[in-house]
Image 1: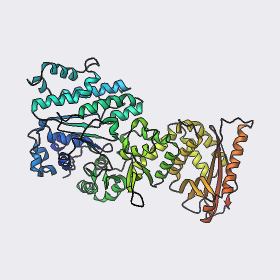
Image 2 (image 1 turned 90 degrees about the vertical axis):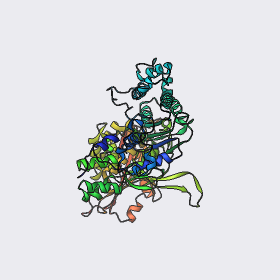
Image 3 (image 1 turned 90 degrees about the horizontal axis):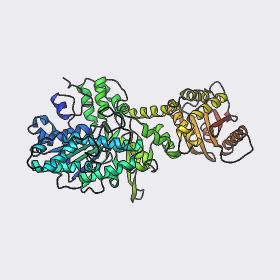
Image 4 (image 1 turned 120 degrees about the horizontal axis):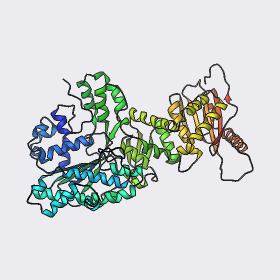
Length: 594
């Protein structure tokens, strides 16, 4: 009989006691404990079992679970007698920042800024202190220390529980627990980077990073009262930003070999689960939808949340992609400049890109760092590293590794499609965009002019608020084209053809369809001229069409035997645009379809 499904349950003891669906990952406990790291940071995408793993570690080591070896009966860790002697043997400080978000928190109020975030962290620490009433009863703790403990536990305002006290609060708690129990505590911090991501999105990164740097360094710097610490998150914030003073600190990301299959489900584990729940015939389809994550050199890793949700609902849906906002990713792509948008266009067409990746995220410079967006997408699970190149063609070590990146799987591709669709629907111009596609395929020049001008007016500043360039808007349209027409056309931009580099080429997969070559011109509105706007636009269109002809951008299409090649010139001046066409190459006949 199949075990009961409890999707999203992150409490290990509850999962085991209720015989819920669970895939054994307890070998992680032994691997982590036997490492030489004093402080370990492990980053994985969201919904990848990090919190359940931290709960598992807590249940294994915490003295509050002393005598609960039964929780681990039949699991991998139970085979190691030496490790099982450590079950329930340590005081454990278990803190999570997972819901320190700008959405409504557990007390029903949205976090608005730096002060609210610091208050939320203090509230979390206050709740943590309430788990240790024995401290107030111990003769090993002085009255002064008990008073300080109470001030933190009963947090009401800044004067009672200052930020300085907050920064020392974990170290102080560890010291008291060490004194009472005679053993150094283990510290578990789950989703450490959630406050930092929220701070970046809300504009108070510089304020919060100073506070959090002090908090992390004070919490983990000294080993006097700390046995080991385990930290999890999504991004690997640079050590210089947060952990500069922490000794014996090591981090393990999605590209690390260590712990590669400890988070997420392997293909064997997924297929066994499908057998258990009576769906062996769905294996290939599940693989097509949810496989694709790569950790270290370990491939065929599946997202646990999507798999558990599928087992529960038995429907193919974007479970994981629907659990979080992609606002930050969308903003970085839209405002990332021409190269970022062009890279994204290639990814959406199913191609791969090669980029130097710095896995250490510095949120304060995220919008300015070359390649930072791909680092964020990689560690967040939206992209996967198909290959990592460490040496050049001569065998010499590269200064920085080069990653071959692609979209992770069908689920994440659908998410990106939805994101691009939102670029239009959020501004109310989805109708104009659909009309643009229809006009293009029907070669309706008046329709192209009306729809493109409508889109430009509604979306111009939305696509690139930093530079206000028509090219940025046009790149957004290109990405939309790739999504809308990718099944019928091979869409390329900025490629060499004839005697130059064209702006856009739409090559139909079916040669009986019309092909397109498009050149875009932008008019500098800062230059003074007596020419009317309409005249400027017409001249720019004429220049674009002449360039197509002079440079023979259509030569490749002619050589490949496409019977009808459309040539379009598009001119932008501010938010105004004009579309014009030249005489098509080839001739229309009954065998050519629009």
